[in-house]
Length: 162
Image (cartoon, rainbow, N blue to C red; front, side, top):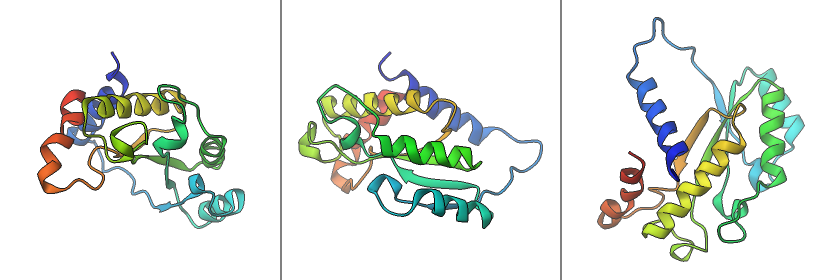
């Protein structure tokens, strides 16, 4: 049950990638923003992006600010602000679920079973919180900075999600 939302997201993404659309999907032009890092001028930058024909933004939803107390999740106001403004302007947000959390594996990429489970709970929280607003997610947690010798261990997170 704890991995349900993330597993379904991955299944839907895989099914969408395998499906043969009747016509090619519209090409999306997007930009990377760093509003989650406090960079940029939210309303002005998004308005200019929209005027330039941009249809999507990519920004982080970093794990550490979401789980400041182990096992307790709260959405930072800044994350809601940039997602809400993007949606209001008709932009499609893509959120990067990224990096480690100091409560697990010393803040490094999740390798241990506890850290993998923690990253799944964090991902589920984000997907539930942004339901109806965000459809696109990029998993930057599982394989972030993985060295070749660590690859089999890092993939355990994906195996759990199957």
